[in-house]
Amino acid sequence: MDKFNLFFEKWKNVFIVAFFCLIYLGQCSTNRTITKLEKDKVVLTSKVDSFTIILKSFKPITNNDLKIEGLKSEKRMIQATDRKMLDVKRQSEIDIELEKLQGK
Picture 1 (cartoon, rainbow, N blue to C red):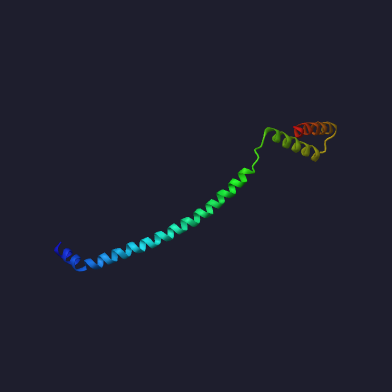
Picture 2 (cartoon, rainbow, N blue to C red):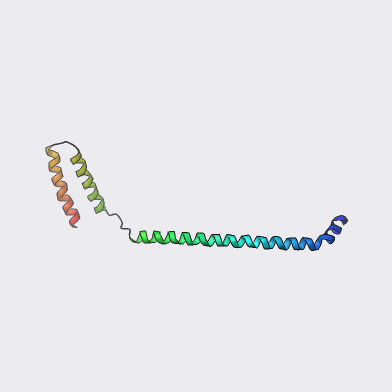
């Protein structure tokens, strides 16, 4: 233990200077990390702002919209197949229902 105390007494000033240098260098890297985090914050803030703009223009889907789209897809399916008289009648019924729903 005496050897350690003598060694530390002899090199005490060097240890203190080296310790303060390490602390100083550690602070420099912390500043770089903070700068990177601030840049990331700006990027994330701009993304959040763009999402809020999108959400403000978002129109929720209602049951009426679902019915209209369902009737339109049914009509397209009927027109894509080669069936006869029943389908023509159903197409005219779909047109009447679409007019009613879109008129609301």
